[in-house]
Image (cartoon, rainbow, N blue to C red; front, top):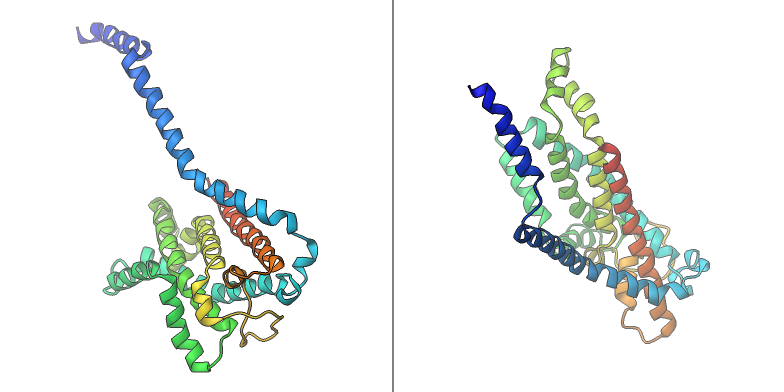
Length: 291
């Protein structure tokens, strides 16, 4: 009896599914779609406005020689190199420590008494204002060495990058299917072999994305560098001397009356925004390849 009624039930369900929307549902569906697109446009409008203003004011004065001249000669080559130096120093500190912290939180720390402490302080560190990080680095490095330097700036940027890498690594490794861990254990792999040869390899694209996003965040920081690396109009050969950077260049000369200096700010802004954009784009490419 039930078998004979089943085709009728299926047919009624099919008719209901395939029937056209009522006018009320039609208006609601397309109305919500329009609102979603409109709000997305409003959210993106400030970003597009920012990019438009920066490129409109700075692109006309962007010249190739600016990439080889120092600030005193109306270029920003030493600022670009200084930014790369300090982000590189920060990466040497934060990437290994951040990845190891993320691995501990995801794979080894769940049964540990210090898991909650490490997780709590890492989360708190991710919300500390960058200017506070700069004051801390000033007290640790600048007061101790009595010298503003690229090393002090790199240390401050490392503190900013560390929680981003650690927390993202933790979340990425938690997304690795547990079946991979079980398969590795079934083949005789111990916990360390499973973690570093299987789990870490599976989560490597996500970890790389986290590192690139942390580098992009550090590249645009200004406040920590004002307290640590300060600035220099000239090339700096030593890592223990004040060092120029793109964010501080923009901050320092923004209120200058000299039109040539003012134009230098906009062209430097193009370089900085392009650097951050490329890093974010690269992270998206890596993420899409993972999928």
